[in-house]
Length: 303
Image (cartoon, rainbow, N blue to C red):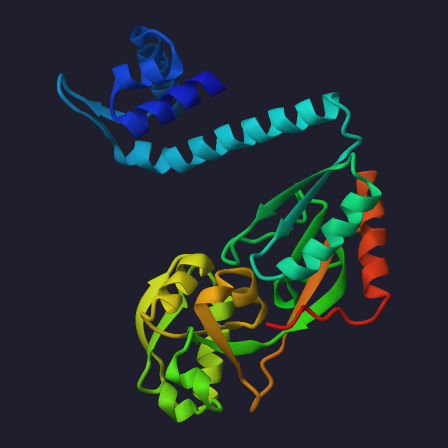
């Protein structure tokens, strides 16, 4: 399997046309056909149903498509990193993060960039539903994540970075934001949430808050990411419960946040790394983290 085969497969899958894929990639249609045929032979499956008028993905083709796209993205990223190093970058740092610890990570990156402007930093957002830390094949130097996601074992060191707390998030000017939080009023509200499969920790935290206040939320929709969730809340389609830092980073002008003060909703975050810091840039970044934390517990800016 080579990247030309994969690239042509993705192009055919997106255009549903061998001739369209050929025009997109600037190659003869016979080349596209040969690459698809060779790829199907190597995989031992048919990737497309082909007639004189139609091209459709098979079930195997649909299953292979996201992995093919990922292969192309990795190859593009690798080529970019090599080009940057060739043009003078003095190293590369790979960081994995969830979409919630952004403020602390941003402060670390700002200071690291000031001290080491020639080291390339590669940041990857990893959904909560996908494990970040792999003891066997860890491709990242540092992981910013929930404390509960740190695996049991001795492979990783970690430092607590900060805590966040939960709040009720409503559209700007919503009646709930005009007075102290009354959970009995929430029983009548429509709830929007990030799907349980996408962010099981956030789902469990929200349900725990509702259980503690003796009601089951009326969930009318599940969103697949925080940005679409907050867009829907800002449009007045429902309310939600989120860590306080999230709305300040995403669409803050559209929403109001009401802190939950009558129970402990703290969420601990950490930064973790493999004990063997083989990348020369990693100890430099760790010193930046330690320097920021040495000033005292990190507190995100107020919402």
